[in-house]
Image (cartoon, rainbow, N blue to C red):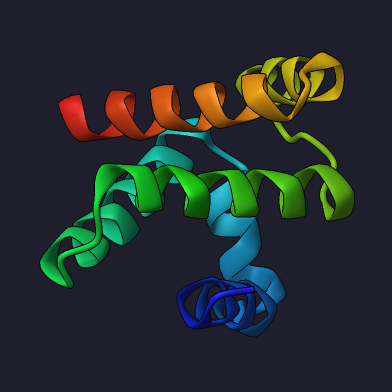
Amino acid sequence: MSEELNQVDQKLKDLSPEEKDRILNNFNNFKSYLKEQLSKGKQLGLSDDFLAKGAKFVADHLARNEEPRNSEQKLLQEMWKVADDDAKKHIALVLVKMIQSE
């Protein structure tokens, strides 16, 4: 795992239960959090491809460790379950583009 993905992993582990609830309980909060993280990545000069890899990493983490808390997350989880690795990369890239376009 690259150093950047190790940092993402550590940041996910460092979230308090309260902060995690604030982010995940509402899809708009989730999108705002992702937008903030993507903005930080862009400021560091990370490419859209790398940001999509980070989004895939986070999605894998959420799929393994979190129950969906709203219908949007449930849809993403269902798509994630049936997607192969290539499709997951595309879903992550679309999610990054969606967040960046807002």
